Image: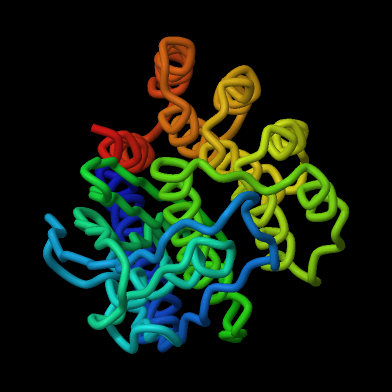
Length: 334
């Protein structure tokens, strides 16, 4: 009898403890609900691709997104984004930002209906931000996905973008937190798309001297400054940039390492494969996502073999939510 009472007491204790934890977790989560955040215009270093400027391009954006629902989605956090370019429409922001990035770097482009030039159609199949926070106490993880089928001058090309950021939330909603989780990743995928459009249709490069200047440039303070400077290097379509970013794939600073892994995919050069493979095999889940993403960008048999080796080593030890996130990255390239 006494043993039965003890078992009941233990069961009640577990149930009450679980209920208390859930209540506190939900309370903590509600403290962050309903965030309003404005995404600033995309900025980049003032560099130009070498060679004569191509003819003007008129960008047409088509909404072909397969997932219906909020642009920012996930288990807990509700974030309402507005855009300095595009108002509340993420596709308007995407098209305008891509056009501005191309123009700033020497490829005249516009989304205006009356703009001259040959039309470039951007069929947007995937564009969203998933928040994968699991409790009110866990770090906020945002995964930003982009898949476009671009058609220009009689040629079609799949253009992808992916970024992952994570941050331990504080009760004080400082602007820097939401900039790091939402603005920075969106800027990365926009810049990735513009750089890949150049590589796919014009293949223009930034001169070596300008790339060296970008490498030597001092970043602005904070995480966003580091991310932006490395993104500048990654968008040059220059072999020297790939050599530099490859040296950072084992960096101890998370923002440096992950931006370097991301940037090697933007450049898409085969020399990066051994570095991406090592990073994927030794890194955490976010490193795995980015290594697989960039190896998929590079393409070819060596990259495919590296992806297979990383997945065989990492998938057995990954929880379901991380496998799901990895599969979402892989889906961008299928």
